[in-house]
Image (cartoon, rainbow, N blue to C red; front, top):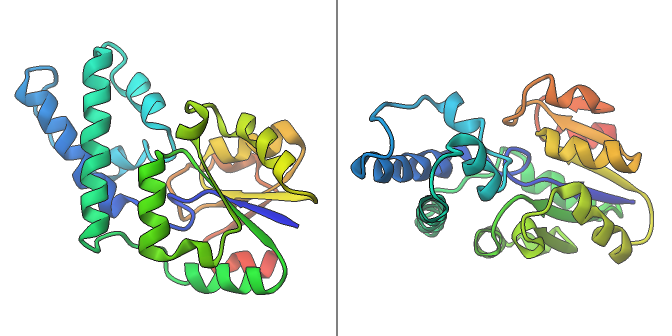
Amino acid sequence: MNLIFDYDGTIHNSITIYRPAFERAYEYLTSLGLAKERSWNELEIARWLGYSSKEMWDIFMPSLSKYHKEKCSQIIGETMLKLIDEGRAQLYTHSTEVLQQLKQSGYRLVFLSNCKRSYMNAHMKYFDLEKYFSSFYCTEDFDFKPKYIIFDKIKKDHDGEFIVIGDRYQDMEIALKHNLKAIGCIYGYGNSQELAFADMLVSEVKEILALL
């Protein structure tokens, strides 16, 4: 059995490094007069977690030039990498224990995230994720195509059945389009409407064990 895990909002409590990165990028835009000065609360920022950088900026500020979208994406990426290096990234409580127990139980764990390779590699190194996951996929390697399209590659790489575990609609979409079971993580950044298609719901990471 293969378990496809989303990362941000499922294993990694990413708001701790995403919020300061987002705010820095927005300050860059206000300094150029491209956005109005304002403060952001955590819920407003967290809604963008789970999107690829391209998707996020195309929705958040569609009229922004391609150059500035890419510049803001670069600012966010570089800031988060710096914060990871400073030790400010945090996994949800019990994440590593759950991953280790699932692996020991014979499940094959697959990492699939709407992220850039540099971000994925930084987390792999900092949290030693190769101890748990057998393979890693990030959407940048697939030109930020939707996860349900990337699944075609994952399916070719791994024999057996699949269960999808994640907190956003992008994760549930994999299951919907490929007729798979899905576990929705309501402790993450998605809303109840996004997770309405999940077969099962968990309110904290360790509950995943009880379902499997």
